[in-house]
Image (cartoon, rainbow, N blue to C red; front, side):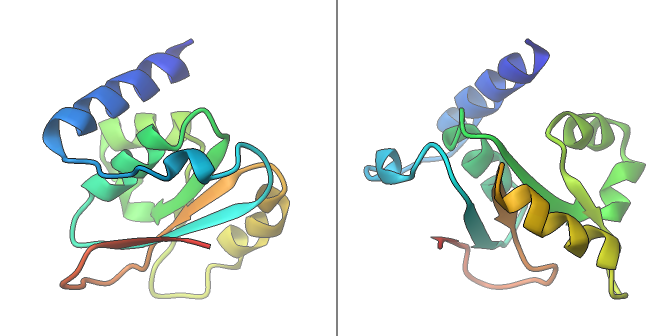
Length: 122
């Protein structure tokens, strides 16, 4: 129940904060593996994708340092986000991907800065 409430808040909030132009979002399948890869300039695109791709089961990656923030730790644990340790070969996070691809959509993004925000659904 808490999960659904948070999803509703995220979707409602990002709909107010962002102009979401996604006329073909209904073409994204409800089941099966899918990787969504974003090139980000900030943090909001993850919340937009998470909110608007629901009710599909999904997970994603986030830098492990995010768990230092109490709110993000709570939110990411609720969303079952996978922590990634940057600057090293984090094989623990990578080993989870094949298993999760059968059950979840994967939200992934590079851990470097860019100038253009893009989302690509493969």
